[in-house]
Length: 134
Image 1 (cartoon, rainbow, N blue to C red):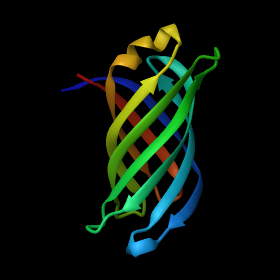
Image 2: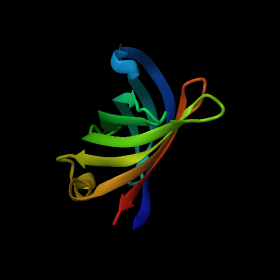
Image 3: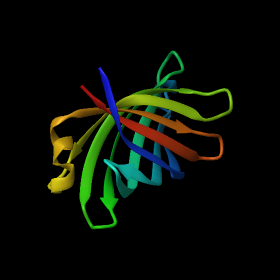
């Protein structure tokens, strides 16, 4: 069951690379930076996702990154998800994310899976929401 909202962020895509087009399936790498909140704390998030275009036109992606607070607390994360291109030229993603941290304030995230909604627009702006998955 979808639980409470634990994080929100806004930011931008900082780079895109084409890694492969073998077999007619494009593999892209996209990096982003964002700011927002995680469990009520202000945070900066940076990450890189690798995505592959599947035969039906949808995307599958896997990524990793780091979230940092102004107090110097850090969390690493790994995620995966599925996406589709939007009519406006962006990409809409849905998936799961898994955190790891030694920061006491965020320790509860070590033992949960979270789910996310991640949207990009045609100009590279991003918005994301992260929910606890119960």
